[in-house]
Length: 186
Image 1 (cartoon, one colour):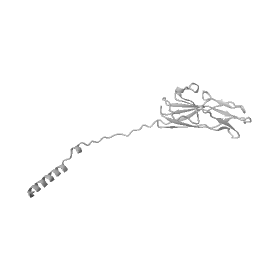
Image 2 (cartoon, helix red, strand yellow):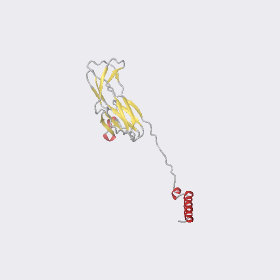
Image 3 (tube, helix red, strand yellow):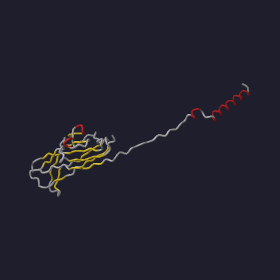
Image 4 (cartoon, helix red, strand yellow):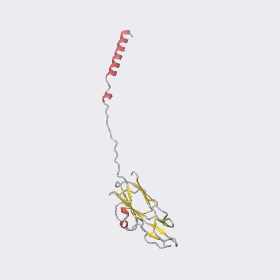
């Protein structure tokens, strides 16, 4: 091959390389940018209120007494308010006994596996049916599928049983029932 032809090919190669470096390719002109967003809505805070105590009223020495969760005036009631239809967990801390204010005597209190009802329709303890929530539940192990009612309220109705001894001291007995609630994210 002659020298002039080699110089000519080298010149063409340099010219093509320079054009490729200077002129952007078609893919460089096809780039685009988009901006998306990250969003969140904070739900209404959960609130729980003890609206009515579980009241056994008068009890006789040595005679156990049951208070049903369906009694409108005497069942224990907790009202939960929050974001309607949001999943919640409800955990009850139940006493093993109730005591005189001075602590001189205690009376056993027990909870059966059917002593609790969860109402999402905001009816009364005596009128709750299965379609309104969860009926005859174990207060020591409430379902993990509970929700705040569509109207933003759920009520927990609690019953129980006191078992006084035959020599139970006379007086007014009390004990704490604690209701913990939290959103589950469902």
